[in-house]
Length: 284
Ligand code: AMP
Image (cartoon, rainbow, N blue to C red; front, side, top):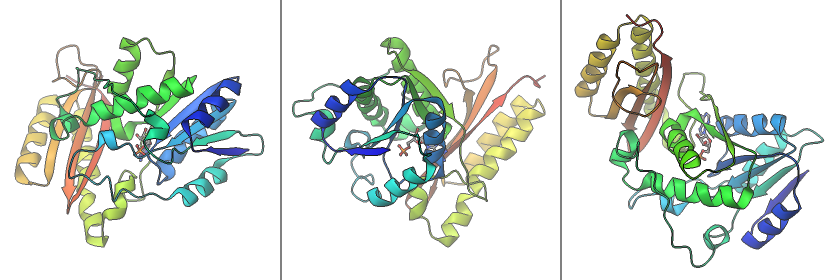
């Protein structure tokens, strides 16, 4: 069964009547296989799943693509249905306007201080505060047992985890691997902005991360770090290309066990992000 709810009050009423385990999949819609992998995992693991579709203005900076962000509600519903089995129960919360998620007098910002001035945060100041604010609100409304997020947005996942821990929120968190297309490009709603040639150029992003991964897997941490610096300096399309401790997004140290290789790459006017996680157990 699929139920679609558009207002805050209807959603609150619905939530009061739910029992059993609840999986939460927060999205901005324009669903693709990446989103659907989160949904499928939640359907497998929970009595019911809440999938939210809300293009959150608070996480867009001025001049970003808030207005042109793809809104494809009808197709999204069809995709959700295609993942469901007979006994599955999905509640789609699709607020029709900002008040239907924030209410009318919302005046709070949730800000995680750590990890909030590196990688994407450096280039999108305030973005993650918009994310944590809406995710906190959605957690409060949904009171989920498990919430599902994608590794695609690794920094976002780590910041949300820190918020969950610091604010003693009850939900468990689960991070799902990155879903990619046949050329290795991470699926993203923004890929639809790319034309044929730009799609080809975009492959530099996953290919570079893979190349650095293979250097790291051979135990050559110093080589990987200098390779990243070299590649980034040669091509202005790189907004960042960094190798950081996956636990805290800080530079590598003697205690680093796992690294994240993270890149942001601009193709035309589209900004793409991707990352790979690598265990350092082969390191010298
Ligand atoms: P968005 O609609 O872009 O806010 O994404 C909603 C959720 O889907 C986030 O947790 C993303 O990390 C996740 N997601 C987006 N793209 C992918 C992907 N290619 N693979 C796995 N998860 C993804």
